[in-house]
Length: 252
Image (cartoon, rainbow, N blue to C red):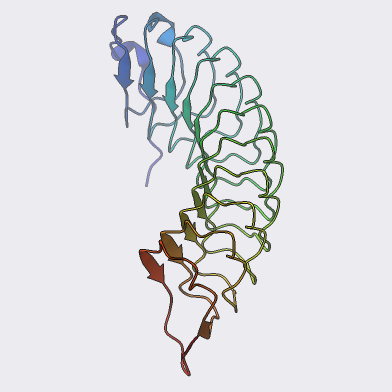
């Protein structure tokens, strides 16, 4: 269909007293004129036509910024938002994780469905509790050693071949690496607080490597190459177990 025409920002009325501003699907083409929002804490700009992050320097009270489903190519110009706790730039065209060094209060970061090829430049985000990087082009789990407060890590639909570099994430309770290129369950020995593990749609052949993960309540290993159910008898807190039936099924 025809490309949407951006709206004239002068036609949008902004309340200077507002703390929560929702401009979802307003056809906004450029972030401008928002400096009047001196009290804003939550700003939602979902499903617009924004190509660049800019002109947000005055919004220093901002806690949540939602830029989901726009046309943004680069993470930039966020340095002044030091109190930001939630940032969502999912469904854009980002190729790199950058420009986040000064967002040290960030607790949730959503970068789903972009074109990101590498996990990098996150070392300063030590308060981060949730990291969502699903549907990108990531090939390796790396550069997350400093994220020791991380509770949930989502890496589904990437190109990851190995479970590795997770030892520092001892507080992790949810790990999702569905639809990747894993062939082995490994590298989880330090994740003693893990409660939910999602490994479906990979190439895993054997259930193993879960000796220290006895707090698991959910284990999803459906759509793999597993032919035998084994090495899970110690998972006494398990409430949900997802596995695909195979021919010549063997239960041990």
